[in-house]
Length: 392
Image (tube, rainbow, N blue to C red; front, top):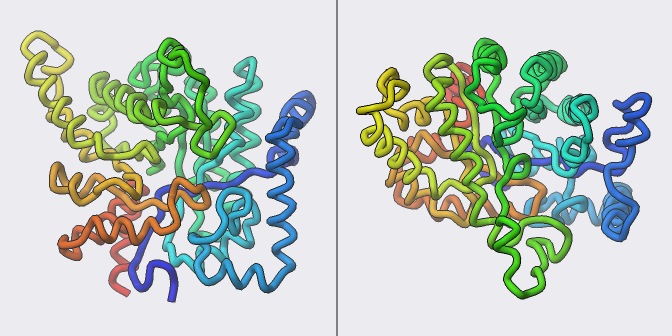
């Protein structure tokens, strides 16, 4: 018996936990020297390397492996999570968890892109990271690699998307910000959106790249900063958490208002690990603004649907396990939401399936199946495949 029992479950959010040399095999020249080490040599980096070494040692310890096999999602997290960086272990973890498919995002490998000092560096780091993620996911067809394509240069973004998809990536992510000083709805990016639509590749917005944080002024509160979610470092803190959904709202509003969803009606995407309790009100506010401003705004007048209908057609969202997805469904529509485990990150909790099951108590099987399976399949353009699997 797997963790999810006999239910067909697609996991819309999982991660690799990159090792120190994760990018090195895919870099050349000056970039190899700059990005060959994912972590700094400071105290934090040394702590991570020790966890990685401990996870490697566990592989030859049958007793430790047996403990994880009982339920890997309840076991250690992060670099100590089973299959965090070892793709053979990840395949085993999927067998034990019972997930039918899993979107795989990078974690700290993205730091190489964010610390780039030039576009050349950013795109070289993105190329290396994408190759590393695709190599990891080549281990099993259930693993779907998510490539990162910076949108700063529309032509290079399209080139990287084509390269990554050609190598096997199944989705493309980018920062939820106005990259390169332009809206994501700028005509310069139309070839990029056209490519994703025509090749049935979903876009992904994820916590991290472009995530809004508490403004510096609000941090000046006369107190020392608290530890972050993991007890130190530079991860999220409570005030940052309250801003998580601002950037996705801005990005999606631009795609609606600038006509991207109208010009490319087949475009699909996901907003991952940014919560989803805000979604019903966001849809209401989009339509409220449409009614209020369409009397004078020619761009709103040219829309062929209400703003919320573009979102419902194109975008899917992952609630946090501690959110009430049942309440969200009642307050909007069941087509919008997807299951995610965040494996092997601790934010996914030790029982996301159980938490979501409790939230969905009282809903019929069709609604549950949408949350666990078919909304994910819709986002990944897998409807035909999904029907075949469900019929077996």
